[in-house]
Amino acid sequence: MCTEYFRDVLLSSVTWDRLRFDALLDIIYHIYHIMMNVEKWTMTMDRGLLRHKPCMQPACKQRRRKSELERRRSELVRRKSELVRCKSKLGRRKSVQRMRVCRPGQHKSELVQHKSELVQHKSELVQHKSELVRHKSELGQHKSELEQRKSAQHMRVCRPGQICKLVWVRCNRGYVLRFS
Picture 1 (cartoon, rainbow, N blue to C red):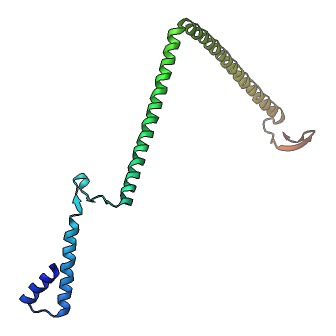
Picture 2: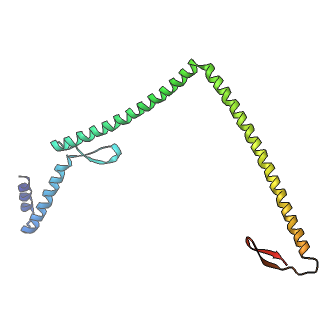
Picture 3: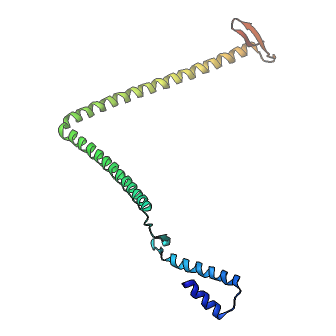
C-alpha cells in the first residue's frame, strides 16, 4: 500500500524509466524497513551504548535466565567463601581468648621457660663464635709459621749471589718442586 502510493506520486510528478524507478523504490522500501526496525533499538545511557531490546523468543529467554542464574550462583559461592573465611578468623580469635582466659599462669611459665632456653642457646652461640675466632687465629699463626719455614728453606738453599732453580724431584708421593 505504501509502496504503491510512492509509485503513484513519483510517476505523476516525474517521468522515470522503469529501471531507475524500481531502484528508487527499493531504496525507499529499505529506508521504510530501517525506520520500522529503529523501534526495536533503544539508546541506553549506560556507557552510551546502543543496546538491543531483549529478545522475547523462548530460547533467548531461557539463555538469559540461565546466564542470570549462573551469575547469581557464582555470587553466592563468593559470599559463602567470604563467610567461611570470616568464621575461621572468628574461631581463631575465640580459641586464643579461651587460652588466655583459661590458663594464664601456664602460658606465662612456658614463656619464661622458652626465654631461658633462648638465653642458653644465645650463650652457646657466643661460645661457638669465640671458638671459631680462636681457631681462625691459630690458622693464621700456622700459616705465618709455614711462610717463615719456606723463606728460611729458600734462604738456606739460595745464598746471596747464587742462582736458584726450581727442579722436579721424585719422591714417594710423585714429583715435587724443589730449589736447587
